[in-house]
Image (tube, rainbow, N blue to C red; front, side, top):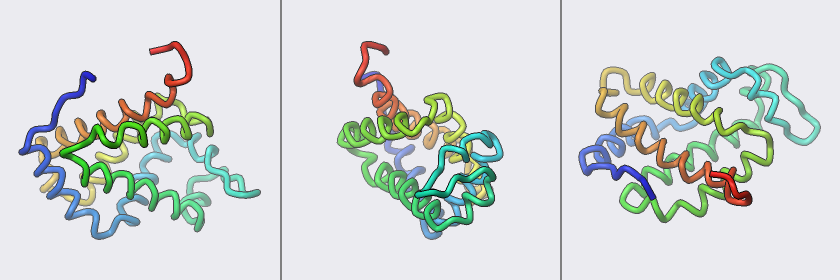
Amino acid sequence: MEREELSETQKELIRDSWQAVSQDQLHHGMVLFTRLFELEPDLVLLFQYNSTHFTEAQECLSSTEFMEHIRKVMTVIDTAVSSLDSLQSLTEYLTNLGRKHRAVGVKLESFSTVGESLLFALETGLGDAFTPDTREAWSQLYSSVVRSMSRGWFKDSQEQ
């Protein structure tokens, strides 16, 4: 795979910054998804629970079911941070996660917006501690995660 390896310094920046924001994962997850829905409002339409169909971001963001989705997303980020020394071990899991996202109608291009939203949430949570080097380290980690997830879009076809 054409993965750029994270340097030890980048891994340390990611771990340190995640330790600071992971104390309140739900809050930072809300910041992430609030920003995501600001940037791509139509994504809220993909979230449906039982017979509930959300049409507005605030409805979705205040639902109990969506809180659980935020927890799951933050757990995936936490797992990626915990696995910085062995990201390859997550490839199959992330590919399957990508396949699930494709099945519910998420467009591969939306992961760029998710990445922007993640960086926004980290910057909001860390303030001045979110240095350009920290941003670059997180960008590389996120790119690696998305590369694995995007295999879920192409795994069953001849594309790529």
